[in-house]
Length: 278
Ligand code: DGL
Image (tube, rainbow, N blue to C red):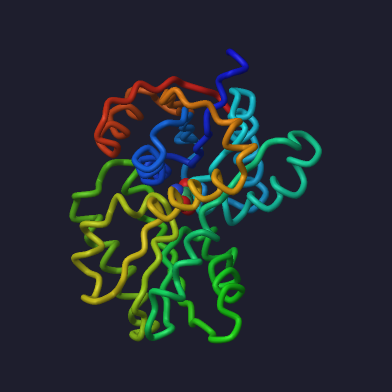
């Protein structure tokens, strides 16, 4: 590998990060990218803090080994459970000149401008919900006018996406069930954050059951905008990202399955390679 090849790494437990990746390619197509999906160990959402941290660190280090100077955790569960440790414990010791960014902070920064009622819903994995990352981050950005946050974990949504059951009656059943639960807990919610990068792949189903006039916040464009802003504010990092428009894909599971679904989700041909983590 040439030392001039310095792609931006994009990591998720599986296919969900492709919803972020798609927007990165749209907004910042000039950069080289490596997408890594840990499909073999998905879902992360039900795993402990220690396991998510361990798996995420393995993936980030692998992306660093492949030349990435900057990695985006396109996964809320990893952002909630591993980002802080990686930034504070691992990078200073092992890779002081590399950076890892998450998806939670950029998403919550939009909230105060969107909600009129001050009541917000967060849908995420069990891990993200239990970490309380969203309520904590929202409280930080709006200390003077409290925003009420109601969270619901949707444990079936990621397996539905990973198994390409998006248009099935089962998908409709579980989406309705979780949205009913959310609005049953707080009918004043006017803004819902899809706090898992897999969930935008269910947007059509979600819209069928979401009350009208409720904002649905997906993370792809927000993260792409924030990355653009980050690269503008840190020109030394921007110069460290190579720009030949090259894309590589790695999965820890079957490449044939990955290519088929990634192709469907991204709308362009994907040829992945297998990689083993851990
Ligand atoms: N896509 C991930 C997220 O944003 C994780 C899904 C999972 O592995 O449970 O949380």
